[in-house]
Length: 449
Ligand SMILES: Cc1cc2nc3c(=O)[nH]c(=O)nc-3n(C[C@H](O)[C@H](O)[C@H](O)COP(=O)(O)OP(=O)(O)OC[C@H]3O[C@@H](n4cnc5c(N)ncnc54)[C@H](O)[C@@H]3O)c2cc1C
Image (cartoon, rainbow, N blue to C red; front, side, top):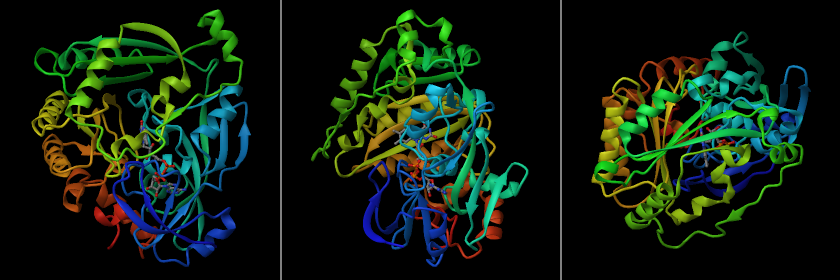
C-alpha cells in the first residue's frame, strides 16, 4: 500500500493538515490499512472543514473504489462502491429514468461521504436526509471485520454511521434506492420577497405543496428590505407537461458547460462592498418566474464555476450552517443575521430552508429552519462564529459537522446533547481503540486525542 505525505484541506481550504494519504483500489488492500493506528476515510474532500483530515495520521481516499455492482431496473435499487460520485450516478441513471432521492448542492460528492454526513437536499422537509434512501451498506470495522448494516441488521451501527463522519469505519459498498423520473427537468417557481417576514410567511405557505424548497437571502440589505430574498420552489417535471423543445432535449445526452476560477485570488475579493453589490445584483435582476430547469442547473448551480472556493484567497472560508427549532426559529435567525451585520460581515451566499425530521444519531437536520452562510477567514471571523454558536444554543439549535471547522468540545456536546452520548456507546462497541479518528473527531471530543 502506497502512502504520500500531503498537505490537505476540505473544500473551505481552512484548516490544513499534513496527512499520509493512500488510495486503495479495492477491499483487499484495506486489511493493510488497519495496521495503522489512526485512519480516516475521505471521498472527494467536499466537506468544508476538517472532517476528512487526520494530522500525522492516515487519510484513506475511496476514489478508486468507484464501481457499480448491480442495478435492479424494476425497483431502482443500485448497489455500488463507496467512491461512486453523484456525478457518476447521474450520468448513468438519469437517462434510464432514475434520480437520487436526495442530493446535496454539489454532485462532486461520493456515496461514502454522503452517508457519513447524512446529507440533506432541497426536499428535506418532505423526505428527510440521504439515509432515507440508503437501504444498507457494507462497512470495514477497526477489528478488520466487514459487516452489512441496515435498519434491521446491526441497526445500531447503521444509525451511528449515517451522519457519523467516518468515525465508525470505512464504508465499502452501499445499496441505494433511486427515485423514478420521466424527465430530467424540474418545474421551478421563483418568488421574489421584499423582507424576512414575507420570506418566512411564503416558506410556510408553500413548502407543503412543493417537493423542493429553498430561499436565497440578501444578508446585507438594510431597513425595510432587511432579509429580502427569493424563494425557489420546485417539483420533478413529467415528460408530458414539458414544452415540445424540452421534450426533444430530454432524450439527448446532457453536456455540461463549465467555467473555472483557475487560481487562488491573492487578496480577499470579498469585502463589504463587493458582497453588497453581488447580493443587490442578484435581487435586482431576479423576477417572479415559472419555468422548467434542467436538473444540473437546478441542483448544482455552484458546480458551474469549478473551484469557486478560490475566490476566498488562500486563507479560505468557513461555511456556517445552523438549524434551529421551528418555534422561535424566525427570531433566532433574525438575531443571527443582526449579529453578522454588527460584525461588519456579510455572506456571499446565504440560504434558508425548512427542515423535516432526523433519524441518524449525529445527523444534523431536525424539524426547524436552517440557515447557511459563508464567511472569508479573516480577523474576527472565528470570534463572530463563536458568537453565533451562543445564539444557536440559546434557541436549542446546532451547527452542521460536515461544514464545521471551529466548534470546541464543550459547545459541540451542548449542541448535540443526548445524541453524542448515545453515539459514543456505539463507537466504543465497534472501535474501542479509536482507530478511526480525524481532526474533527478529536477537536469535538468524539475520539480520544
Ligand atoms: C458546493 C457545496 C455544496 C454543498 N451542499 C450541501 C447540501 O446541500 N447539503 C448537504 O448536506 N451538504 C452539502 N455539502 C457538503 C457535502 O455534501 C458533504 O460534505 C459530503 O459529505 C462531501 O462528500 P465527500 O465525498 O467529498 O466526502 P469528504 O468531504 O471527503 O468526507 C466527508 C465525511 O465523510 C467521511 N467519509 C468519506 N468517505 C467515507 C467512506 N467511504 N466511509 C466512511 N466515511 C467516509 C469522511 O471521513 C468525512 O467525515 C456541500 C458541499 C459543497 C462543497
